[in-house]
Image (cartoon, rainbow, N blue to C red; front, side):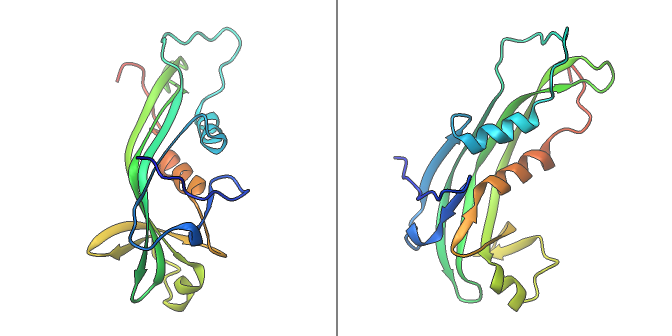
Length: 168
């Protein structure tokens, strides 16, 4: 069953207050969601006039996962996001310049803490955090809102192949 996470007016931002403590919310987003479409658009290399893409596959993007709000003794209210992110997008072969499809498939493991807490515990240089004996990528929430768009965008571009080669 898919639960709805309360969305704010800003793209990809969600209200922390709408989540129940220790109750995972399952959700799914694809290119039909405006902010996911913007990630896909940014991933796609522009086709030039005369370029031919030899595939029947259409670019697509998808994320399915769960959000869990937890109360941590040290960090207070935290939000844990676990899920699977995938994208098929147009890129260019670095050797020939030929347009091609590439793919990203990555597990997302993110934990949001309040930006005030990050400063309190001097975590400015930290990029990961251990919660319940599991390691997560560390992100911040502000004013009771966490931004899933920025997290998924970061996962997309960190995991995008910088040297795509057709047929490999």
